[in-house]
Amino acid sequence: MATILNIETSTEVCSVALTSEGQVLEHCENYEGRTHATLLSQYVQNVLHYARTRELAIDAIAVSQGPGSYTGLRIGLSEAKGLAFGLQVPLIGIPTLKLLTVSTMFNHFIDSDDVVYVPMIDARRMEVYTAGYNAALEAVMEPQAMILDEHSLDGIRRAGRTVVVMGNGSDKACEVIKGDDVLHVAGVKPVAVDMLALAEKAWREQDFIDVAYSTPLYFKEFQAIRPTNPILKL
Image (cartoon, rainbow, N blue to C red; front, side, top):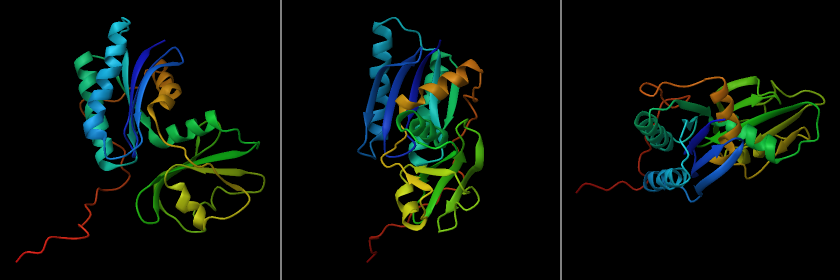
């Protein structure tokens, strides 16, 4: 089984984890937001120091590939590419929406035979990045940017099915999408320790991304925000 260094920076959380043989060996996390540029390299060094002192060879680098924060994704992928190139190991890309789904599956029991997991990442205003996955992680709603309204999930709702929504975009979704069939799991965040299962699966299947040319999964073009209090020119 591979020893994998995992990096997650797609939202406000900055996290790094070292995993091997189905276990988390070491990890560093910060939930305060806007700290990725200053903390990520130090977290990586902490994890590499742990590996060196225990004579563990890093077999691959895994990085959360998006969608999510434009800046956070660039920082995470740049760090992961540099590590993969420097260590001469493969690079694994983990879709962030699948990561949120797996985290929910492993940490929350859903008492239903027919479940669709709908991870949501905030994309400002009433828009989210989202997808729908069944228990086998098969897409029943393709990854996309979605403007939320009361009918947004009508295409996957049906009698007897539970639709589970989670992620930092799910709070505003539950303000407009109502029904006993919609279950909101609050507090689920994408973190590196939860990348373990997806990263090890990718390693077994030799499912790697290109170290030189891979890019984050944005789903839409980056748009700069005009400052709320611009400096007036005299």
